[in-house]
Length: 280
Image 1 (cartoon, rainbow, N blue to C red):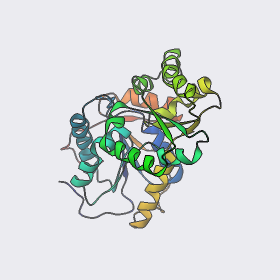
Image 2: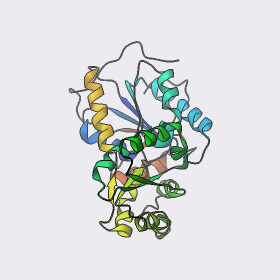
Image 3: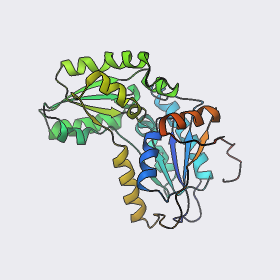
Image 4: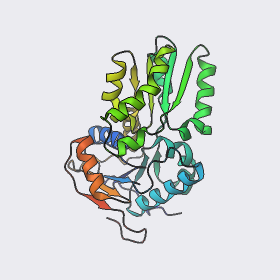
């Protein structure tokens, strides 16, 4: 177990995802916490995580978080629903002194938004199968027994986003096969249960128009992070806004291209150094 000797407000926040999906969370963190130095690690060598076993996802997530901790971060944001579902308990066990924030599908806010009581949930198969997710569903079904959830694994969607094809005809066609059956069953609300999916909003609107309310928890994650940093006295209020430091486990060039495409930022991305390398 590796933990820093002391935490300070000037240390960076580490944000981790299997690929570029977590950029949707990073975007909100940057907007709400502009003074915080950010390190974004994309495990592009192993993306996507959604169809890998829980054991593999957990192992990959721990490797990524260990690397970020070696960079002397004060907090870890697991900006990946699959990694959160499979590995957040193990990550918190390994790094008890760190603030660890995960993401989960926004079923709770969907309950208050839906008028028909039929809610579509688009997520990875691993997220849908996870014990953490099933416990959440069970609790909400007890609280709101008349609500009906329609679960759909978004197989192939994260990969299309990774490939820069979020606006392609192939992506829209695949999305249609997932969304149209939900709408036919009365769904009026769609939970985006993977951090890649906010980058599909235009395609979703093209298919569904205004018939689906979209639930994205990125803003709530950033708000929760801000609250927890403030609670621990680790909120950075002194530094000037800076561009996040982007790191890829395989192709820095591709990551930089995707940051420009998805966030409209021109950046230089870097290769993930070995765990023995000194902090940035």
